Length: 410
Image (cartoon, rainbow, N blue to C red):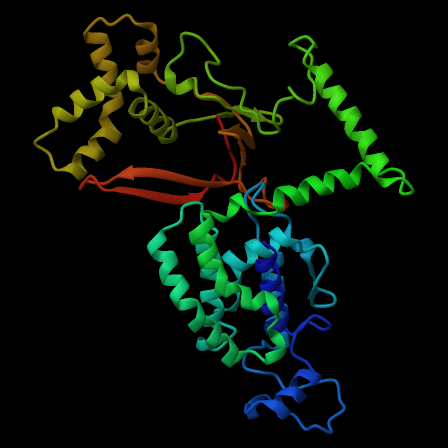
């Protein structure tokens, strides 16, 4: 955790040439002139100015502004990371103290290689990317022993390549600790069991309990005792009393079995959030909605397979087209001709109502999803969709996209 943060700070601040934070300055260049045979980084020992020539591992001022602007514009799902726009000061073209360890964790593993792809020479970018992939590999929830052994063998080469690029002042104890990380992960297991995040958060909670700085320990103890007493007392409250221990989560989806005697597809846990509006689903959109409901309802599965079996002489692509156009009418005919009186199956045959309620936010699976329009001015984005499909060759494919611009849930 701390190694990753320090390595990221040194790489990012040096590549971006951030004033007061970079590891490359006039003193570092003079040391290179005296001790190293690297003429591309050498300077006149009598030079007393503040600016030094740009190195191959540094970006230009326009590139620096573009990278920081790009970082500030990034949006992630709720709970993934903090608001990165607070970590950037575009007036001074630098980062702020708001960039915490977890922000560095996200940028190091997910954003840094993308941000520097077109800004640095290939050999510099590839070296930084390998470091990013190294941290990404050892921070994975599932570790592969063979991959870790290969990383352990390749890390010295990676560090050697980094030493060929960066000045000697770039390296401190934290950079050299990278060599030991694959072995540590191989020996101790996944890194998230040994991370300090939970302890740092707990220490932060203890700091909030300090109300008397003259007696820090006593202040923490008194606040902690009150919290323990209130938690113990909450076990004896009535079930309908909302306490800190029993209060629902922010993205609570109510739970299962919402209604009785309802088709399973309509009994999935979830709830709309915010004010609902009314809209009418007409024409082809209503046909598509009806077909989707029938194809994804377990109670209709026997009818669906029977309909496809009746079309076995057609090619697969034509069968799918016929399902979209004819299955609804065929199912309605079967319900009427067979005299089926099950109210659920009959209601499915008649189709959905053209009038529907619409929410711009919907809570489901422990997350709050919203429309693309609703998320325009928000620092997070929760409008991504993934639709798993099975192709004609029975191969599984996931299609990704963005939620609708207008309606979220009906």
